[in-house]
Structure formats: structure tokens, C-alpha cells
Amino acid sequence: MTSTAHSSDRLGYDPTAPLTPSGNLRRRLVVSRIAQGGAVLAAILAVAALAVVTYDVIQQGASALSLGFLIHDPPQFGGAGGGIRSDILGTAMIVVLGALMATPIGILIAIYLTEFASPRSRLGNALRLGLDLMQGVPSIVVGIFVLGLIVDVQHKDSGFAGSVALAIIMLPLIARSTQEVLRLVPTALRDASDALGVERWRAILTVILPTAVGGILTGSILAIARAAGETAPLLVADSTFGPHLTFNWFGPMPNIPVSILTASEALNPAAYARAWGAALVLLAGILLANVGARLLLARSRRRITG
Image (cartoon, rainbow, N blue to C red; front, side, top):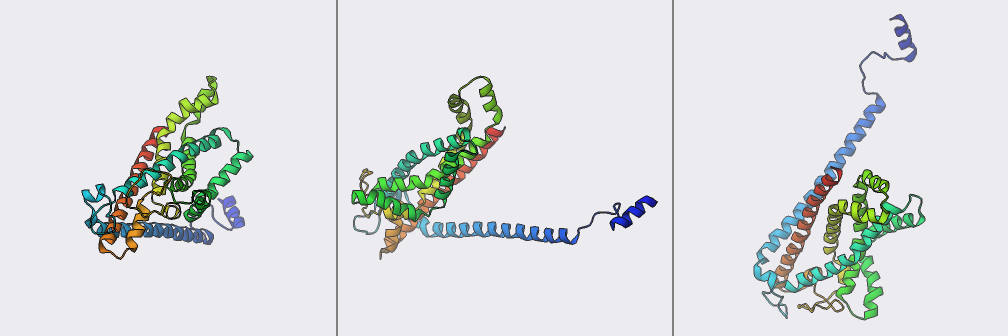
């Protein structure tokens, strides 16, 4: 006891006493609680903003929804009645073609970065930097790029130009999400393939990709849903005002974002109601795709990690 007392006198505190927060620790706890509170408040505000927008769109657009609204074309001269059949089909064609362009390229980039590129690879680092930059490029800039690359060359708007713009937006999202899913594949599967003498490309095709296919599909769906709601690139690359679909990718093609803009600016109550209905259809499609993709992603992660 005597030596302990002398030791505590020299150290300036009693080692046997219960721990109490010091001034520095109390300050850190306060800062931590403030940061946590700010994060929770930001999340609540984001969810509240989404709820307000969703409620407003449902309230304004529900009255326009009907079976005829989905299967009929808009009137030729902007009168009452009509629907958005051509806009739905045109949007689907543009998005599908963009997905067919972006998905294989994005998956191949992710496979290279995850399975082949070393951490010091110059090409790998350049690709990672390029994906980060592409994710941060505003969609209107992508639209202007496609305008100069395709539209000015064709001398007309086209669904193909819109697909290229959406593919550029999808590409980094698909590549990054695929990278994350491939990293979840257990290293033991790769080691077992190497131990059996399986070539790397064959192991990727027969072991790694089948294991991660659910997550890759989920990431692709999220990227497609993200691009489907983009308006700026389509306004620049495919701002057609025709009410009927021509099934020609290299000509102007109706789409929901442009239809919403043109109908909302028309001095016609029927067209204004049609714009709200189209907005509700687009919002519902995006929400369903996102929710379904999140559920599929959770299932895929449980399957991969066991």
C-alpha cells in the first residue's frame, strides 16, 4: 500500500480510482454527439424532402392515371385526353440501348480493376480516376458532349444520341458497383481455383462471376434506374416534340422527360394534367426499380458472404 501511495503521488492520480471522463474526452464526446445528431438530421431532411415530392406528385398525378393513359398516344394537337404510350416505349428503348452499351463495358472494367490490375498499375489508377471523374460530371455536360459528338454530325436529334448520353452516365455506376460486389467474393474461391491450376480467365467465368451475378445485376438495375430519370441529356440530345413513336433509334424519339417538360409549359390544363401523370409514372418506375434492386442486393450479399 505504501509503494502504491507513493507511486500515485508521483503520477498525480490514483490508478485504483474509477475512470472518469477528462476534459479532452468530454470534448470529444460532445463533438461526436453533435456529428451524430447532424447526420441523423440530414437523413431525416432527405427522407422528408423525398416524401414531400412523392406525395405532391401522387396527389397531382393520380387523377390522370388510367389504363387509357398508359396505352394511348397523346393527341396530335395537344387537346384533351390521350396518354403517354409512345413516351413510355421511347424511354424504354432509349434506356435499354444505353444499358446494352454501358453494362458489358462497365463489367469488363470492374473485372480488370479487381482481378488483374495491381495497386500500382498505371492503367488501373487511370481507370479509377476516370470513373471517379465521370461520376462527378454533371449530366448536362454529358448532354452537350453528345450534342457535339453525334447530334451535330447527324444534324438532327435522335434516340441513339440519347442512349449514348445515358450510357455515359450508367458506365461508372455499373463499374463501381460491380467492383464492390467482386470484392465480396471470398478469396478462398480464387485460391482454390489457383490451387487446381485453373486459368485466371476460366476461374472468372466459371467461379467468380456466377457467384457475384446477383450483385452485378443489382448494381446494373440501380444504374439504369438512375439514368432513366435523367432529363438534361435527353433535352439536349433527343428533344423531340412528336407525339408518335417511329421505332427509329437514329431519328427523334419521344420520351417521358421531354414530354413532361413540353406538356408542363403548354397553356393547356389537359396537357398540364398529362405532365403530372407522366411524372408519376416515371417516379413509380424509378422507385420500384430501386427498391427491388436493394432487396436483390441484400439477398446477393447474404448469398456471397454466407
